[in-house]
Length: 130
Image (cartoon, rainbow, N blue to C red; front, side):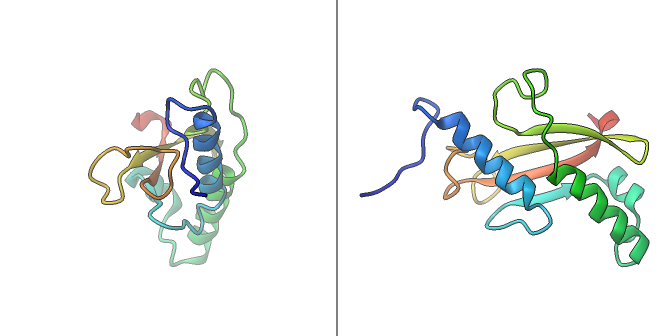
């Protein structure tokens, strides 16, 4: 029996996308497969040079905020996919988003509920950058 990923037209699609996004977000310190995490230059500047202990620790604490994020509601998660969040870190408002690409990172994923054809890219930015 072959299992296929749900599609937007099938039952369970949004729950599958949300579960994959949660799995990715909760493991962003060690992304798997084709998944990536990007920090904008402004966020990188807030953190500093991660080769130095204080900046490494700042980055670790900031990523932990994203990993532990659970404040999903109709206002910030209208499609119930857990692909967007915002939080305050060190007196700065940060936001994160997850976008879905094909495995070559050139086009939109044909099916975000299928990890075999989807690369997730999380971007963490200052809220004012959006």
